[in-house]
Image 1 (cartoon, rainbow, N blue to C red):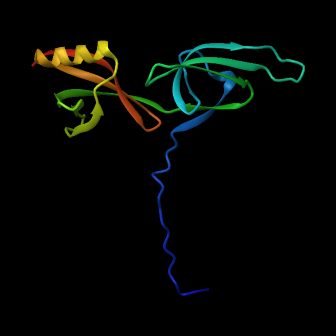
Image 2 (cartoon, one colour):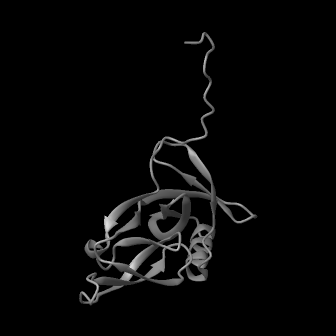
Image 3 (cartoon, one colour):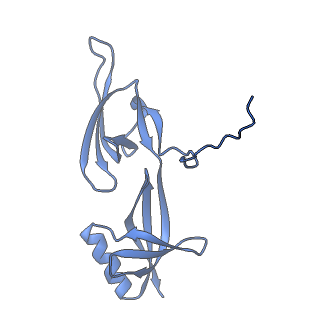
Length: 159
């Protein structure tokens, strides 16, 4: 035994995983799945029959929830796939800065200033027009795997 104290360098976060395993055969349409390291929403699932070597395969067609790209993956149905933890949170829009960032009001009364305006032109114009008219707007923010993006807008009436 030594009298020296041990110091540990901790570079870990709270330990909450960005994904959880789920058997490929149990993932359904409108579920979520990680394909090529991107969180995706499943739009189509087809399962092939067991072949000569025994594994039924699931063919997933999914759309990236942040950039809208279509991705495909084929996985044996008995194997595990990564499923992202996807959260949706509503925030009230307070301000839009010139450099494309938004200022949002959280439920506990603090502000969240680290989100950019969405890249979708239709949603972008709805947010800017509604804000210019002085409407009270609530934006839905989807977060998964350390990424966040505004993906929907609700008008809760005039100020």
